[in-house]
Length: 91
Image 1 (cartoon, one colour):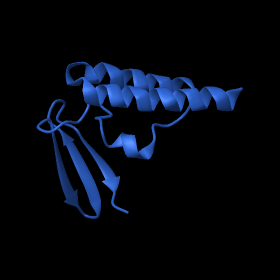
Image 2 (spheres, rainbow, N blue to C red):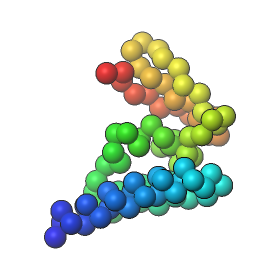
Image 3 (cartoon, rainbow, N blue to C red):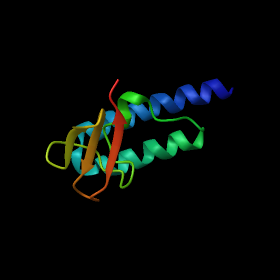
């Protein structure tokens, strides 16, 4: 039962990210719903989707609203909306 709900939640998360990509004006709402879905079933957002939104303000990253830099072996994403940054290790 629990695996089924996690699988459904994962499908919903991927669906919401696709909708965010298609519909930029409602993208932030879709990202917020996807994060809430993951938290409900205690499942992290998949690694390939984590870099597509700001974890501080739930803004979907599209060209023009974020900046990417490399520094000290880290990939730094800077959100231009909330002025915060996220760091990811370069593997």
